[in-house]
Amino acid sequence: MEKIKRYYIHPLIMLIIGVSFNVLSVVFMHIVARDVDVEIQTLSNEESNIERRIDGLWSSVVRAESAINTTLLLLRDNPELAIKYAQKSGAFLYGMPSEVTADSLLLTLKSQRTQQLEIINDTFSEKLSKEQRRSELEAQNDQLMNIGLFLHMLGIVVILLMDVNRKHY
Image (tube, rainbow, N blue to C red; front, side):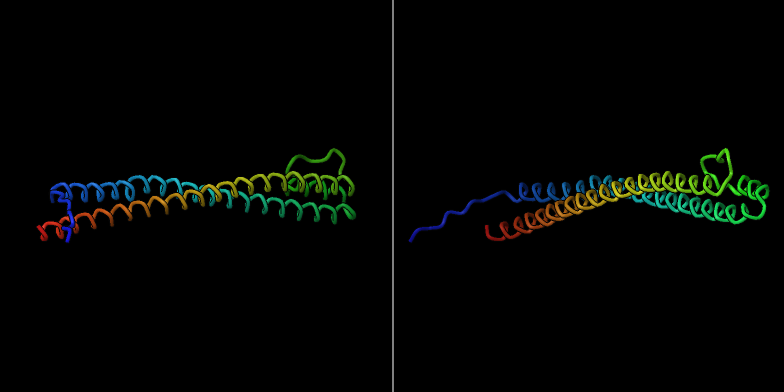
């Protein structure tokens, strides 16, 4: 019967290896992953700011459209009052038309709506790109945490093996 050859690793070497894995896990879980967490938080704050900006843009569009609709109603009865109301109400986000008629108001409204929607679309696209980047960073953060947890568990296993190895010799 052949004797199985066993290899002996000094317990101190196994302890150093186990502690090294645990230190690496701390580096991954608390230093590297924390930097990614800070970047994720920054992106979340930027997304919130963009949402507030979009809400502000929408409310300005709604206010302008309401003011233009009121101006159109006033234009039939009292053109001078309609012009004064339009100037004071901020109905024209990009400047008052030179001639205030129903057609020029409708044309201005359509132009304003198109410009504002383009701005809102661009802003929303920016928000989507930040959300995508945040999602990628969250996935990267999960991977780093998993690597850190694996290294931590590996370090514990090596230290336990050191104890088992020492009891057999």
